[in-house]
Image 1: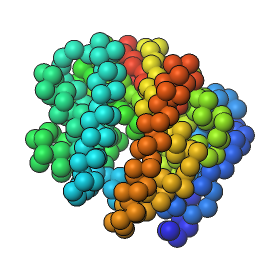
Image 2: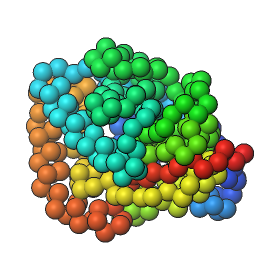
Image 3: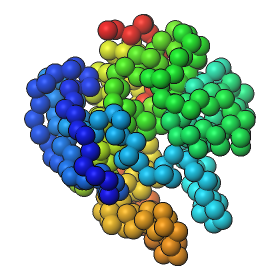
Length: 321
């Protein structure tokens, strides 16, 4: 566990108001950051966010090494590759729903670039931005993809260059999500499309589990989006009203298992980090629960109160400042 971090008091990421009320306090499920992290609700616009939170230069300490795309070994690498391919299927479906058929696409937080490699196979010109040095390196070496190592706020994106930008469970991690959406607006051609995926703070699981919900992921998740708060933020950044779709049964069951049995997930990650034989036991146990609960996950996801959603919106005007 790290020493106590430097904390900062954040304003509402959407309307910049200081008026807020506490919702709950959450601990770091990965036990990398000490203490409790308050989640608060803006009394002006209703956006939920973490405050106080670690200072920007401390946030990197809250992520385990493997988060950034390090290469694994043997069976672990095979299993990881299968899991990643399953993840790409819902991304490809979300892009298809958005009507994106061709052109130049930028994936923000692209990891190793598996999704971009698949989009290139479909005829797209692809580029990525990835904050993890190892993930960016692997994407360049394994797939030959143009991946910039860095963050969105540090990248100099050409104006109007892209037909589509994607962000898969990235926006909730950014200290200034509205600024990020404005930067994406500038980088998109008029009529270009943004596709995002996010955990839903208004979901059944979020309400049921509160601070124990896996989707809170304090202190890494800084803004806790609902469909309404995302829509308001997109409008302020110059985008159309978003169209939403559920993330699907796989996300529903995975997050349900990790909310119900958080100790199982932590023990698995700890065993992976230390390369203990028990890593296989915890991994297989988690996978068995994930698969066994898929019917329930499919039902909940279809109900409209699923644990996560994808959304797409078009650039209709320059961002409003």
